[in-house]
Image 1 (cartoon, helix red, strand yellow):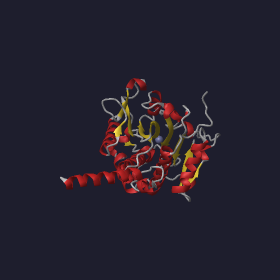
Image 2 (tube, rainbow, N blue to C red):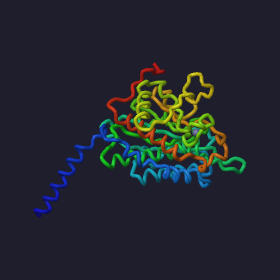
Image 3 (cartoon, helix red, strand yellow):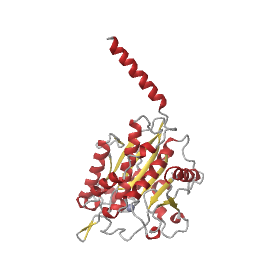
Image 4 (tube, rainbow, N blue to C red):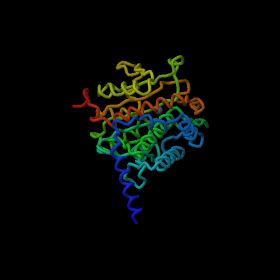
Length: 337
Ligand SMILES: [Zn+2]
């Protein structure tokens, strides 16, 4: 008996020390980012953008396979679903919302709850739908937006690893894979009209849509990513993003498409806009367009997995900082009254 109690006592001493040492604000997040690897990104993307998923057209069987795939992934990592429906990983959008044009579909949503400020949420988004099959050709959508999808999967794994090691983020982090982006940002619009977590407590949205390729303008300098929107609502978010990049990743951050008069208007063209219009600060991560954009030739063999890893790590470190800093990014340039 005595030996047993000695053992229990030793156990508590070890545990006690461990919990004192686990300060999420001083630990180096590098060690958790190491779980984000080009090998895993490639493994996941070759499955996710394979012909089996039939181009992931909203409401069609291929999209259903994709949502099941995501659900099974989060469930296997023991990351909780965030919905209160029968299936906790799905936010169902009925055909009615699509004016009957598409079958029922679903956003896939999961959460790692915060340790200190769990009622504040950082939302990471990427769309997992694509444009299906046309004239017998499957549009695999490896870059658009398989690349963003698998990046979020890997980022979630890194945060879960940190949480299991005792470094749970202070704020909650929501992993939101939206549907029906290709139909006009409808999955994210639905979420913003039916938010599972209050929009006023949503501190920022980091949206990823196409980060696995290199555009023509960067053929000679491929160590880049376009950032759009980072300074539009919160100067502080922009400064955080720049400082994190400088400290951890050192990509060339290209703001060409962030210009107010840019004719492409990308700021209004992906899912982050449904957050930004509610004055939630956003950053949109993007590699620009390329010759395979919205063509059947957007396939996984053309992805630059080394770059995809680096860009995913930048987003992980940025999310880490936003989730763990003292205060949420201050909105100094609101657009609403
Ligand atoms: Zn897209």
